[in-house]
Image 1 (cartoon, rainbow, N blue to C red):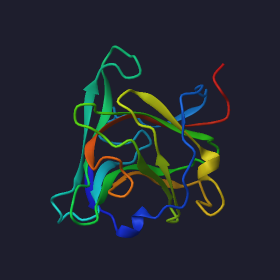
Image 2 (cartoon, helix red, strand yellow):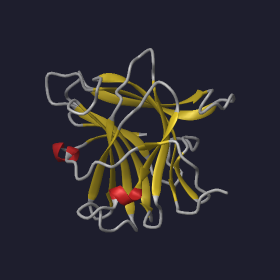
Image 3 (cartoon, one colour):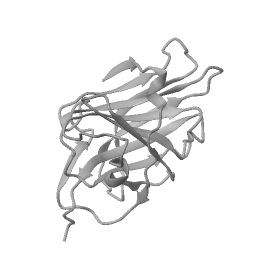
Image 4 (cartoon, rainbow, N blue to C red):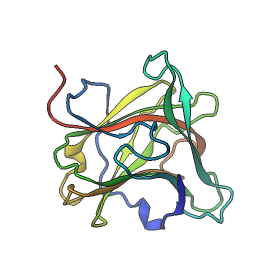
Length: 206
């Protein structure tokens, strides 16, 4: 798991996607991150944190893969990603995590989804930025909203992300990035839990 610095231009938003919660699952899924692969994504990329200004010790982001029971009602313990973020600073602050996609072809998929919840005791933001980047350096950003202290599946229609002016080539997708910035978050420090990040095709499960 690696840490790195991201330039301020990183926070530019091209598009805010429609966010849908729940809904039927798809039969053909591409798992991106189940967090059971020793710190790597399921498609062979790395996973790590990043900070806009590592010299500003009042802000930052940490991540851990932990065992947690009760994910979407599952009584057994499963690996989930714990994200501890802090953008409470006197300086402009933004940070987050990145997941390497290893130039994965996402052109045939129609939805992206993940399981997510906030930590009731530590507090959490109810929204954050989510970005996809391709090998050409093109990017698109949406805002994930409606996070609660209960597990739910967030579904993002790819037709929103594939709108004109965003990413022109989805055949080599490089990275998925979570961004917490002091202008977007509803709480400037807190903890989120994430699991089961995947992309799905049109064919729905019967």
